[in-house]
Image (cartoon, rainbow, N blue to C red):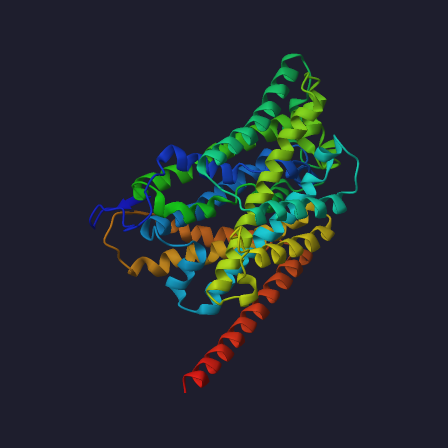
Length: 450
């Protein structure tokens, strides 16, 4: 991987925005996106496939994520004003429906992710304080998130740093408490390599990597702040790969700690697996302290995801890619209230699935289509030269990125494919409704002009 230095060493933004994001701030921004709530919710789900070898699918998922991250590094630094995968698709393929589906896949993945996080919020972590049925609690939680969203949320980098520290502190607690447990002669190190009886280790790892991949997605949202990064050609790739590597190290340590502290059967039975791990160590960390940390991490992830989903919905409505009804804004708050309601209702319906693992796999399936599009776009856009220095990934990386995405697609269940197909079918219907509406508006406008 190299920087393309054949052109003038400019940042290429030509932006009206202030380039205030330094390397460390961008690193923390991406780390906060990646090091989110997924790991708090999915360790139990992973244990069903790989037993105590929790580190294996996480390590594989990291390697696969790094391939697509290479493609993002090239396209984001080549087009630092771009709005992400949908814009890359528009530049590369010039087919409106394709770029729409790439954008809508991101939107659908966000709503599905929020549904999964709401179920994680309503599980054992919330159960520390109050005993309520998960699905109704998840629906109430999403309603509260919608109210906060409608009031107007300021996503500053400073607040992201604070939330990242809180999320990271919970994972550090898991690692440290298990280390103390081992120092006292507790735990069982032999579990870290124990796959379920009769399981093929390679196939089990590949199957679990689908869920583990969910813990690394989020890096693609960093494309939206590239315009405000100082020297993106140098800063963005370092921050991107550095944050993914850091998250990978933390995840593997948490996976090892979880396996040592508890057998796979106990991890898989818990909707708050890391809380169970901390409790099993016997270290004097009150359950309510760790539960609050986990709830903050999960709630922040859901809130940021729903803010993104509602704003993407609003933006697509403004561009007339979705029905104009979704572009209405509250007069005082200046927030997209119809988009917020629409995305929240869809997320609420998805909580009826009731399984965090299935929802996580659906998110990954949707994003795999986005990532395939981005990896192919890198190769298609190689003929498009720009007049500024940018990162250039080795050609084999996007090729392997496409192959890795296709490999993960083959491991998805029919149920997950059905959920994703339904969501995309809804998007296609809305797209043609929006086109028909635009056609009628143009006809009316032409008639009035006469």
